[in-house]
Image 1 (cartoon, rainbow over the protein chains, first blue to last red):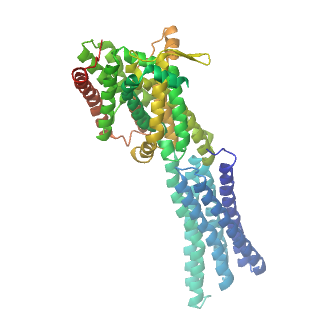
Image 2 (image 1 turned 30 degrees about the horizontal axis):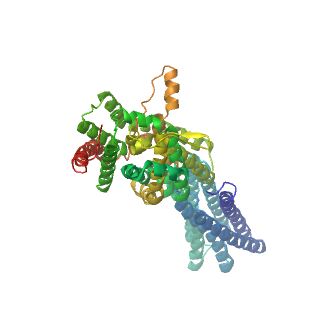
Length: 216
Length: 358
């Protein structure tokens, strides 16, 4: 039997490290969006690279979590759920990196009347990620609080949906944007940013199931 | 060396007659150790090696130190006073256990041995004390009920502790592993103390062993008998219990490691209450009613504890079919063992010309 303070402590640190990377990456994502919308492209590129580095570090941490879960035979009854949860969370990091890369490549031009909606949308998406990470932490030690965090994730996801619809309507109703290709591009980026909160909500729903299974 | 000399003194014939008790011990070790560590090993919370070592050591210690109480209680039902008779009683019980296990029916070694002793009483003409019989048979009903009660109480305490303390899942995993080992030690000790009566109890009145002194410690003939029984149980644990543990742990009952701890502790408490002479003496000295010192069925106590957890969780998922099967086993096991014992005693006496009672 392993003693507490060695393998178990290592695994706890890996999980905590992984969650910290997700939180930091999501905050960088929010700042990067702000910088892009404000036209500070150089700073945006720096942020984007920072998110890419965090994503790589997150991958390494995730590998360590997966390996230790099975190699050290820890938490056998919840191992499968923890494995899946950690794996699903990887999508948040991947997605944040991918989204910023697409912005960097395509360089869409957002009209002024839509910028604030985009910013609020990315802000709510990041809030949904934050609530998800708090929910995951609660899953490990304060199971009764998980539902509260999951509800917050759903709340922010709905806010994002509203803003997404608003952006799309504004883009397609606008006479200022003449080319259909620009309208479609704006729609595309609205949908991509909204996807971050959709992913969070889906993971949060699974988290609720894992929590019920964890109840003594 | 001391043991080799004892074997020479005891004689091969006596050992031959003891073989059915050893078989019973092997069977108990193979099956009942799984009730202690089944879920823990099945879910890989405790390695089989750790479980086996704990079982072997503590079942034997429990048997040698505290086995006398329940054995005496069983002896009051019928003092089988000839070694060939003891052999048949034990053999009939062991055969019944084996047959019922093969038929897929839940079986209790306690009920088998009680049935076989009643069979011997009928054959030899010794009366069966209805008070003693009722006292032992009563535990078949209130043993599981008591285990269920313990399980409900312990379950709520553990639940409150775990949820209230907000322990990290991984820390909790470590604590659960330790708790399972401690409960397993207690469970093994209690199993040895209580159920050695089923293995060697019928040989006590006709024991071929004499008191010996080892490094200043006197081992009575009965304790040597129990030591032998403990070794037989350990052999069952080492050679066969792994596959039973994996079955219990992964197929039969879906217990979490924490609820498995509750089941082990509740079952061990029941076995301990019906085996501890110290506790009985302490209660009696204070004018309190004490528990009868008789062997109780560990399997049934275990099922009772699992039912207790189902009740504590809201009463869903209770397997009434299994309950029906257990009830069937309650009737079939003692009756079959008694009939088998009666017939086998007749053969032993009239075909093999052995005196089966004095």
